[in-house]
Image (cartoon, rainbow, N blue to C red; front, top):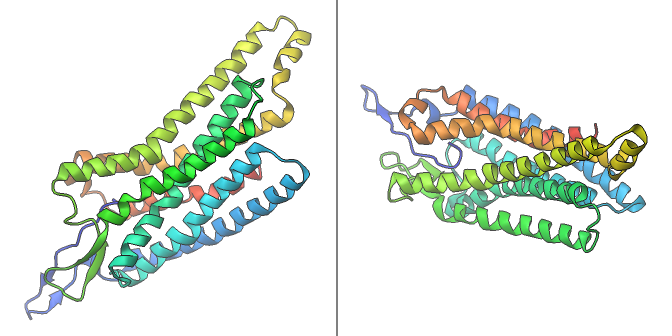
Length: 311
């Protein structure tokens, strides 16, 4: 999968010339990856830059915690856009790694940093909406709480990305000295260690945010239903539901859609990852284009958030 790569074997033909496997040569799959990543990068750059401009304008009119958090989400998506996507484009073009060991480790860090940050900011948004609806009267230090959550999101992203610098390194093919790749090959002493590291990334980037998101929005939905049932007539209902203003309802709907898009984009990729970790042999039979396509689909999440914001 994307977080763990190996150096393929080579074959020799009858004339004793080295014949590289198809995935070690520039092929149609690399062309498709370059085109799709380029399109995603253009769409994401335009969309998230527009979101930043709109939020900056609205913050001049009225300061809002949710606008601040959406700004950080747009920044996270732009980090994916300008750090991860260009890396994937260049890597698909060169096939092998040409930038040396130090750049291999640095880019491995930034390859996941924006993804972690995007997930953690979604957690911040969910927690902010939770407190806004469930505990609307706890107004003390709400701005401070939001800033602390965002600081923890950035710090957590750095901490979770740091192991990439250790596990990724430049590895030269044992039989083809001119072919090098940025891989995790030979880093882990056992397969169990490799799976443990991969599961850590999956838990922190996907399961932890998903569990928090499910809990917070389920609590919000239950609270709305509870207050609605307590209402006896229309007048009381309007009064009891007054804690959700029209603007707050719009914000709640928008954030629910954002997290739903996150779930839709990333779930297929992580289902494939689980399959790969549980039964690697059968997972290897899946067309590699499908595996790469699932990661590409996951990356569309960075393009979707600006569309949701504009809804």
